[in-house]
Length: 166
Image (tube, rainbow, N blue to C red; front, side):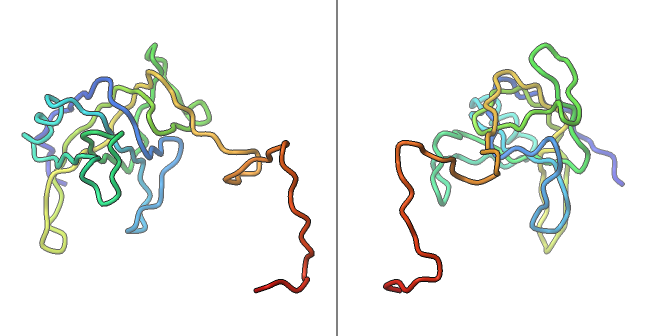
């Protein structure tokens, strides 16, 4: 493997989106990786990333606009990144919280070159570490469903197996 010529870059007080740090996420290529979109980058941070070749995107200009992200990048790693809390205490395994969109963090990335793959090559952000400053915890109902019961409304009575208009 070629030596990585890039230095680590610390991105202070950024927001995390679509983050998988407890366990890896299966990517489109079938590989499992730890991932985080790093948003609300300052113009100085975005310029530093651009200078090393990392593509910085603007949430307002996405196919489905996501202006809350501001300037952002994607980052990933095949190895689990180091995760610490605001007091720099290491978090492992079940101690790593489920990180929701908008969590404030300091993130350590390391640029790396990739390619050529299908005639393309570039520089991406390797996800090395995350310091959680202000957690927005990802929550799900106990059943893992999208919705939770709402007591003030009554569920309609539905005849199972009955004839309906459709």
